[in-house]
Length: 227
Image (cartoon, one colour):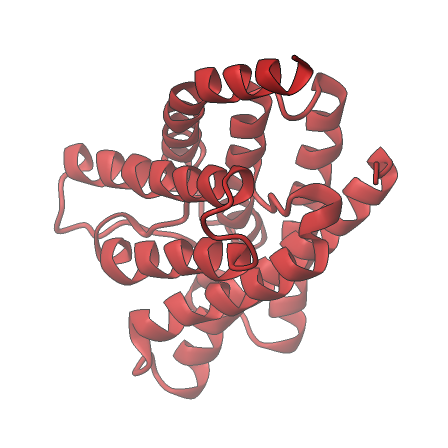
């Protein structure tokens, strides 16, 4: 079944909205209610749950990007058109902003609304590559589960899982955003822009690297389908 760009726009907005509420709201909630005692494991579990909801609810409509860097990867491999990039990007940014507004209104404004921040104990020459790596691994898992039969039926678990694992093991270094929209929304609403440039460069680099690696495979796959 083919879905319209308006349908794609709608589910991407809703999915990104849910993801940002879980991803940033969990950090704010932990800080305000538990004084940060739940820590990174809680911050890793929350987006895993959000992506389970989003992928299984909306994956058939939009492939459940919820992330401009992922959308760019899909464009590089030829799975979406130029006009669709506009729909995806717009929906993801609006959805993220609405998500942060929800957190501000109903959860709180602590820790800069859950804005991403790297660990100052590490050099930028470590932080930046780690954020690239986290984003590249996310894009790789997405391509694998969407376009192979190996994990059919477990796409939400795999995609949510890699996001959760990236956060669990890499957030203490780079902040592990992997998602420019998720990084932008709390930064805008809290006025915290110091590290935003990292999350508007490294995730795109990571997903682009993976997309170019997969691009030839998908071109061959499409050619075989037309034969």
